[in-house]
Image (cartoon, rainbow, N blue to C red; front, side, top):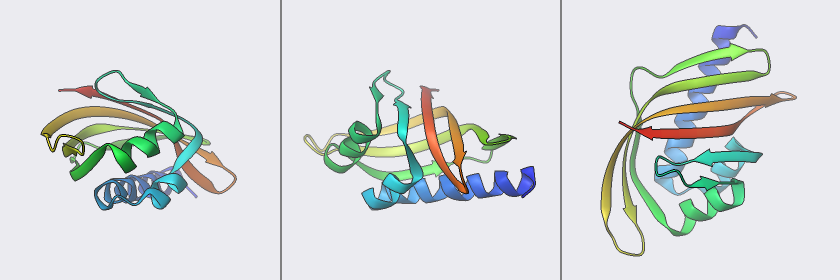
Length: 126
């Protein structure tokens, strides 16, 4: 598989991750993120995989998660680095408070065997 095909596959995986967030599909998220995930939120909160999945399942409802046109993937052998703008609408389950988010993200996707999984995510508020 050439670099462009891998980049396209990563874009599809990211689109699936965004859909899974909106659908609350924890099973799909679990398969898309690596067991060694480090997820850094725009607030600075750092979650491992269990904490991230628990947050999505119990604390935050994603109403909208949309990648913008500037999403770009660089492939380096078994690692792909994806950057770009992400716009989200979320609702905190405990309070029903809604928040609009506009962030720039960096993601690292790692290939183990034939499977790509997100191993790192960091968001910065715009």
